[in-house]
Amino acid sequence: MISKEKVRRRALETRNALEAEWRQETSRIIVEKLLASEWYQQSEILLSYCSIRSEVETRVLHERIREDGKQLYLPRTNAAEKTMCFYRAEDLKKLRKGDFGVPEPRGNEAVEQVMESGAFSREKILMVMPGVAFDEKGYRLGYGGGFYDRYLQRYGTMLTSVMIAFAEQETWIIPAKTCDVKPEHIITQKTMITQNESCAEGAREWRQR
Image (cartoon, rainbow, N blue to C red; front, side):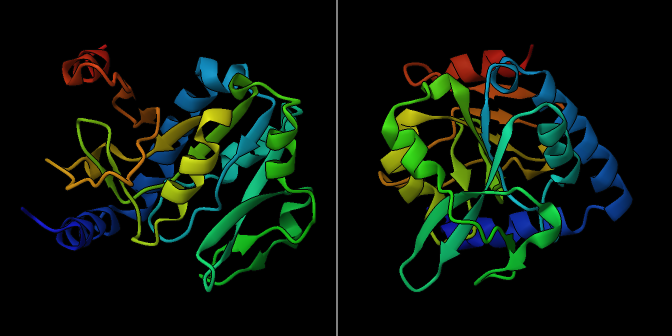
C-alpha cells in the first residue's frame, strides 16, 4: 500500500503549484460556502486556524467571525508534548509565531474549559480545520504530527468539525489508520461532503449535489 508520506509529498506539491492569485480567489469561494452553511449559521464559537503557505486562506473568515459577533479561538501547539489547545483571539494583530512558525494567540482563555463545562451544545461549537489532502471516503491527511487526530479523539463529540480545502487536494486514497479521525464535513470550491459512516456511497451522493 502507498505510504502516507508519499501521498503527503505529492499532495503538497500539487497544492504548492497552485497560483497565489487563484488560491486567494478560490479561498474566498470556499469561505463563502462555509459562511452560508447551517454549521456556521448555528455556531457561536469558532475554532479556526491561521493559514500559512498554500493553505486555504482564513483572513476573510476571521474578519467575518468577528463581524458576526461569534467567538474566535485559534490553536496553540506544544511541539515537545505534541499537544494543541485553542485560545480566544481577541486581537488578530497581537498574534505571535509558535513552535511551527504559525501565528498563535497569547491569551489564557481556553475553549477546552468552555467545552468541558457543558455550557454549549456541540452544534454551537464549530471547528474549521486545514489539511494536506482528503479522499472520497472523507479521510483527511495532515502534516504528520497527529495534532488534530488526538484533539478530535478527545473533544470530537463536543463540537462539529469541517475541513476546508481546494478540490485539487483530493487524492485517490489515504492509507488511514484506526487512530485517524475523519472531519464530519469537507468543503471545497466545487463540493460539500458530509460523512456517512454506514455507507461510503452516501458521501459520494452528497458530493454530487
